[in-house]
Length: 267
View 1: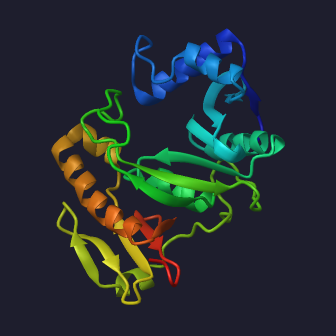
View 2: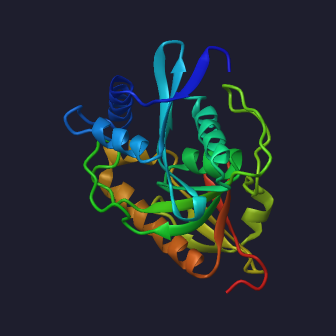
């Protein structure tokens, strides 16, 4: 991507800049950073990686990854300015493959539809588990007032990739797909959303569950935290039941509908 460079960061000043960037993203003060520079330095020293993306001289994205069991990589955090998320994740991927890893896991807020589409469709990762109130109460400016449910995704690092430009165009990789509106609308409704519309549908073959999330949960948390929490509980009910029944999250449509899929013979 023209003008954008990505490199691993090891020095104190560079790690402090990454900490400040994360403070901006999560709307916290420098006195209470979500990822303190000294913690990042320790993770790098232990063999992890902090990647930073620069648009010219401006820091425009960053990520942190460590090794998990069996040479699997765990991505603690990744954030980037619009259009740069894909190149940041690819930098993590290349770093991991160079060290013998074949898969990467991380978590994200399942109510943030744009992140779900990025993870499941653009990257081709698969949602493998639903974690209720994973972090407990959070005090940053993005998550404050909500419960911290998260979805774990697994990304096959050996799957073929395609290049994306700043507009995010391209054909996703892996198993992630968008939802076919016709198939979705043909499935019977099972749950009602807090806004009165249909929240979830389940097909008669019991192979797919479709679940809707709000248009912008971050904005909703700021303007109506009570309604945001109702959405949290409603989506949680659908997802915990589906994941317990052997479903995984395999897609997200542009209009905010997840597709969860269960293979034949799954419990």
